[in-house]
Length: 614
Image 1 (cartoon, rainbow, N blue to C red):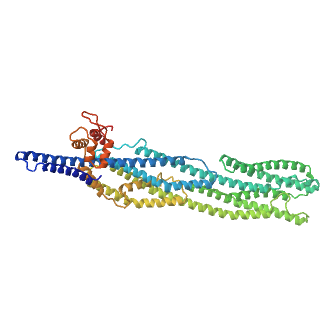
Image 2: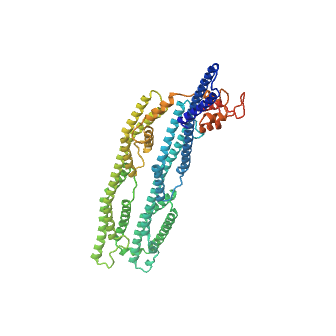
């Protein structure tokens, strides 16, 4: 009901009084002179009563309108608080879910879902939280200015309750992000170990393929003495090769055990493959021992076997094993997150390269042995193959693997240097972001505290308040470019997959607080602050502050000085909706002179200002 309608009903009541007076005047067409004075007194009394009723009705309309608006704002606060708390209640269990996935793809999907939550779902709720706090402060200010009691939200819906729930959400979110990153690192470690296991297992299986069949042969039974002695030397070379592979088998078993401890999803197949390798290794050891015992019984074969073959085999097998290990290391995957880690890998690589001259000397020595073998065979016209009967390693294989090692070294150099450059770039991004964040973070916190104090400590002239808020607006808008630049650096860090920054404790979550400041000083998002509505509101609300006593006095006028008022009197003097509002909320009057349907306007007026338990 507007003030215009209130005036309309009040004047309508006055018009009724004037019509009643006119009717009475018709009965006195020619009043005697002695009654003229009484008639004039009665007319002035009626007009005065009508004016008083009109003023009382206007006052009640104004008070009820303020009270209805305050109730609407309270209900709106309750609704928004309930919705925000419900969203927090639904979101926290999702963030607290720590069920790990078995594959990198599944964990990456969880990480993408979390980033969508950060980018799309959380920011609107941050705005709602800020707006809710603004609405609460606005309502409390209006209640204080209009001389009403402070608003107390329902249990569990205080601003502090919402802040506590939001803090629990932030804690769950932080823990969830840390868990995601740790799980991704764990799965990366698992994939790295699994690939390493497959490479070593494949290398070993390739080496071990056919070894059992060779060891089971009984070719020495039909061989000559020379051939038996050659078989013995070959078996000695095989034993050297077998010992050289012991380290790889132990590494395979250790990697399989680590994969089991880290709960690798394909641990069953890993264990099965590892068990087959270990079982085969045990059989190789047993078969090797048995064959040696048989060959030792045929020692007379040693006289015709050239010692150079044995020397080649003994030196070629470890060298071949070293080259295989070198190729594995040069092709090994690496995952680093800092300059120190990549520097450590580069140092290890440089140490490896320092051993290459010595290794090349060994290679040339081995080739010299083979060349000597061929020279001896040619010189003495020995009718045997130039191939070494003691070793499965050939000169072509050594040349191929050596060339492969030399090709892999510069490739490894390049990949390490590229990773070093990337880590240097990441470090620069960290420092650049930290330098800005360490300056912007405290600034945002300071401005938030200043505006918070301003919103609850409204004192001084309105013009001074306006100038103060204009100064806030000017400072914040001028500082916006710094936030934009910080956001750009943050985007670069995200794109570079940098997840930690030891140079600062600030993250871009502070940007939500900055948005809250902008909302306080620029609620319409227009880049300017308008004070006209605020000035109008303050002028209107502070011009005539109502009290419970004034409202009681207004109701007493409408009730013709009775201590109670009837429903028909309210309907006659007030607009319909506000009359119904009073009838619905006024308690029954039970004092002296009470009549049926009497309403207690004194208790009702006191309740409007929080002075009773109504």
